[in-house]
Amino acid sequence: MFDDFRSFVEELDKKGELKKIQGADWDLEIGTITELFAERRGPAPLFDEVKGYSKGYRIAANVVMTARRQKIAFGIPEEMPELEVIRDWKDKFNRYKPMPPREVKTGPVMENVLKEENINILKFPTPKWHEKDGGRYIGTGVVTITKDPDEGWVNCGTYRVMIHNEKTLAFYSSVGKHAVIAREKYWAKGENCPVVICFGQDMLLFAMATMQLPWGMSEFEAAGYMKGKPIEVIRGPITGLPIPATAEIVIEGFSPPPSVDSRPEGPFGEWTGYYASGARNEPVVHLKAIYHRSDPILHGQPPVKPPANTWYPIPLHTAVTLWNRLEVSGMPGIKGVYVHGPGNRIIAVVSIKQGYLGHAKQVGTLAATMLSGGACSGRYIIVVDEDIDPADWESVMWALTTRCNPEDSIDRVRGFLTSPLDPMLPPEKREKRDFTTAKVIINACKPYHWMKDFPPVNRASDALRKKVMEKWSSLFV
Ligand SMILES: Cc1cc2nc3c(=O)[nH]c(=O)nc-3n(C[C@H](O)[C@H](O)[C@H](O)COP(=O)(O)O)c2cc1C
Image (cartoon, rainbow, N blue to C red):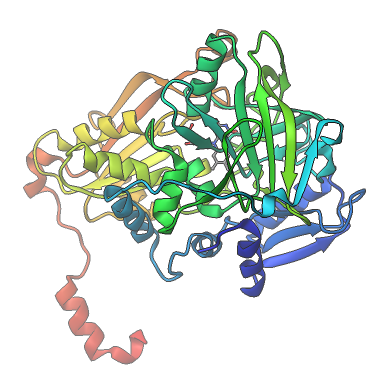
């Protein structure tokens, strides 16, 4: 596995997965090329010599938007089926043992240090990605690092970052996210919240930052565990927070209480396919230092309108923790978990071996409570039988259309957390900051109490298939 972002980008190049592009404009050209490449499932664009910027200040986009690239990024065998990838990571999380980061004195990220009047985040060729974006978003594939002031553990999360000016960034994170909880604790004490943000870093640390890990589990420790060796960090000279030693670009700064400073953030072309959250006043980060490697590569992962996608196609960020939590809860019979839809967050599918009356309803209700905390996350939960591969959308549709009776197989539960990014939040709820939504729990399993009488499936048995395929082997090469 790779210890930094650039060695992963180099590997993409070696494997024919990269396209180098010189001379594009940061103002909408890079964003539009990225979108067009995503729609065509093209190679990952690596932009250099961006208009108005020096050679070597690069941006790599769409780096994990295909299953192949995602597998390369995380050292997953390329032939492994999608559900097995989720199962493998889920099994690793079931055996989880924290691997604390290793503090080192210095590292490549300290090759260039900018302080005081030299602080200028506009030094990097940050794109304006979408036409209606309210600014240039440097943070699309980021890791934001904060510390809980009372409990002392360090969190990493991926939260978008807009540039306000040379020394000020927007700090947008949705309600309920761990950084939001931590920063409010500082503000309640009248203190500024220390923040480190990395723009281009070890991909496993990025993966952990995008996963909804439990409260108290540090993504640094989880990334080290998944790699089998500690993440190397430098103690931030200003904030004391850990800085990944091999990151491309890092800022250290402080987020003051919104009563002291908050500014309009957005609109931004969001992963749901809309500019739903518009512009609102949000907290900011005042920069106290910038560190960067020479010839830095900014990690760009701007959302594009579905069904195109620049995020992971295999839902490691949502399905792994959902499966793990269902198992840890002691729920029997869980055979597979997958999450479909925009951002791989909206439609969760859980396959089960039904063991008792009400089992499917119990699993669906539990899954609905466990997959939450982002716009429309887990808005639809579908429970299917064990013969359905939850990763195979066509098979899920077959179950939904043949094993689900709308009269009694569908439930709606109100009052779950969504976020301002939810395009279906009515203006009056948005106004009151009532970011809640209903969820739909769909039982698409054969009805338990008459399962034995359910019509048999008209697929040739495995024994018959084997016999016929052996006899007609030349047809099935
Ligand atoms: C590419 C990408 C971008 C994301 N951007 C945001 C964002 O701007 N704001 C946000 O609250 N969550 C965003 N998320 C989701 C969070 O990263 C995710 O919920 C994560 O679990 C948050 O970390 P936390 O649980 O430690 O708060 C994004 C996820 C991905 C994959």
